[in-house]
Length: 118
Image (cartoon, rainbow, N blue to C red; front, top):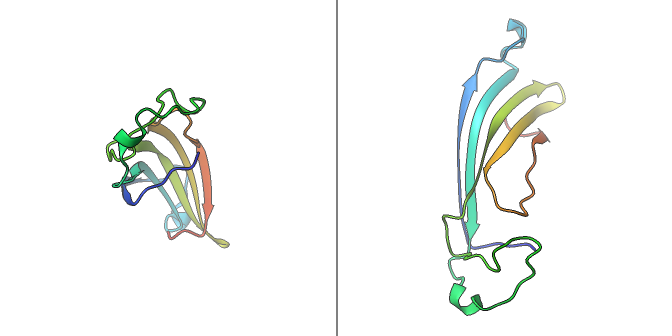
């Protein structure tokens, strides 16, 4: 059940903290941070009243239909991230926990990215 919209808001805050167990020689290539990310996508043209009586498959949610014009149905997560400027390029290891999610969201505890800016 893919959903989308024509409006999006994203926000985040990151606090860089000293990386434990790292020698001074690697201080410029390893960075640890705590973060909180928030975001939502919604449809400014969605007419909730037109679909109010629609019966949907409730396997993914207890609500038969969400109001996809509501920008306050955001998702949020927080966690810790370690960035390493490796010989192969920048690598990011993130461990996170969803703060606000809905049933059916595909939440990940661990993510790994290669090639993002340091």
